[in-house]
Length: 336
Image (cartoon, rainbow, N blue to C red):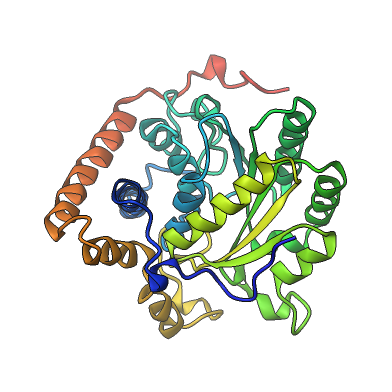
């Protein structure tokens, strides 16, 4: 069993991957940030009627983990799923059209923001029911184990899920059956508006408590995409070797409100100073600075990417707005 007493700090240690891989990670994070900030701005038009949970500030987790995955691996997510969907290769136009409730959406306009799916690239499902997809991910992993396949399943979830019964049931099952399940906890410190310290026993940490189930459990700086990648590569290798599940706690922070596009300094559960302190640790800017300092690219490349990504999301929004709504006659398709 491998554990660590401190977060991986790849940027501080200078442990960047090769240039091509590092630049791909940076562009992927910029893409997610550009998409979500654009959608947050457009949300105020009220043409998107789905509740929307943005991942702004948490991009390094999805991108770093996906960098360690193969196309044949599968991923499951919860309500805050945009970044996971895009990082795994989900179609941007399908996602945007889904938020606009259009027939061309990835769930044909019927699922909304919290039910994205792209099985063709291994993003199987997302659900707003807290912890629900953990068990489904364990099921996929179990099938891989029985088939003796080198594939792995990934389950993304927030810190609030660790207080759910399904969390403990899934960990126990995964260890007993030795399934290749990579468990990614995005610890952004709050379950909606409730801070971690009033929800969990004093003096304990999530990753340390997980070790009681006898599986490797590490904590990583979730705002360092290169550190997340390194940890995910270790975890993925462990799973592929048939050693069972692997747990990674990623310390990160969401900038916007729990659900919706706004800033929520006035909600009473956190201060602007706290949010600003995390914005100062911006994972996107941090990674950009690292690749520029390493000589992998110059500032002009960052500027070019930014323009390209703005154009891409503008085209996706135009596509969504021009797409038809589902017909009344087909509204019950897919129900059971």
